[in-house]
Length: 132
Image (spheres, one colour):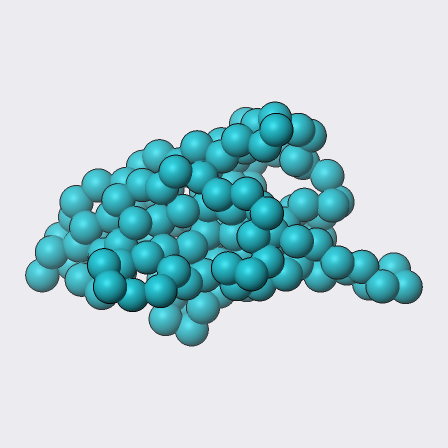
């Protein structure tokens, strides 16, 4: 059974930084078959994907709203996928979740699924609050 545990949330002022960490356990996730995503949900808004990483290909994708400010990375030795968040804005305030994503393949070409519909497993979330 896969378990994902987030940490690193907190309260910061606008322009500040936070680093979220997602520890993945329960199976050997560091393989070419895995994709990990970071999502967020603010009160009254739908859950949205902010970044995802194809562990095997080492490729990352970002939502336009965070591109250039957020960076997703993996640490194979620690089984973690981190989200570095810089230049934070009040609109980044939300509960942040990590998740495992569907990974597809066709004739040797692989890809990560995107969005809530592609999620296999969720973490419990960590709160980020950015004040102006």
